[in-house]
Length: 364
Image (cartoon, rainbow, N blue to C red; front, side, top):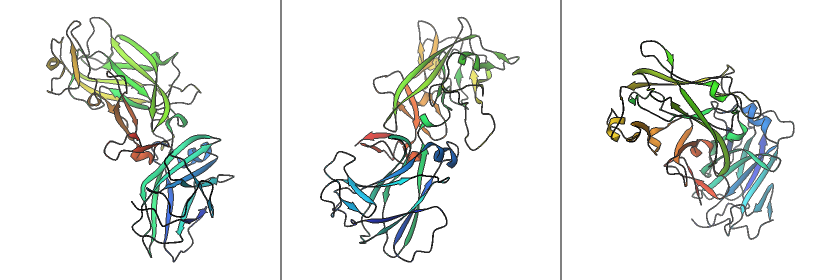
């Protein structure tokens, strides 16, 4: 892409109310939340301000050095390449709603496209993230775009982000070992085993005897360092899942380390427990992987020495919550994690880009 001719680029206006009529070429950017993850009020309460970063491949023609100013925009090199980006900061002050931004180009280049990253800041830390892979102006038009903008998982109440077996699975082997529940952030572990339950209908509804192993897992999500709690269930020796309807239940009493309760749906004020229901097919024991996949799939593998089935080291064994996508854990061939979809988040940490095909952040 040639160097953008849009700089000196934009007159940025923060709008607290309805947009006044604008007869010239413009682009209105509205910060848009995903209600199931977080409300606008939650985001506003969690940030001190918003920072917009505009990037043009090849750089901006009028920008020759970091530190230059163009109206409210400042040239800064944020991604470590040879060309500075243009940065605009909005302090929240007493605002109770998220702003919109009206962009007015001084020089129109209808074929130029920019990348927008948007960060909600709390002090020097990033609390919310969003953006658009491409934005641009069309001469003579007053364009409008919604910019995905949501809190990072560490800033939201905890929620279940993945289960094994997948919710709605209809071909789970009764010899399955290693049922799993993963939360979006660390939760209190002392009482967690008592707040989790595996049960099967069989002849009568009954809790499956066994034990939970709880661990804290460190990972990278949207390019930021993150942590979460993962709980794994092992049926007791000689115990198998009963053929028929089974379920993993998570009590609404689960709390994160700061005491915030489970919030599976931010659009509802009701207490949020969680249930993943699945259907079990009888498999007394296994000697080969095919015994663990009565539907002919490849989600489970056999451990011949124990005769038990375990989840395969692949995303096909997982059920990710709405808004999450699966990634095999780097350096952990036996693990996979559900991570926030960067296509929903709108952006990644500086130095990373969102892959449109997978929804995962990749280094630039």
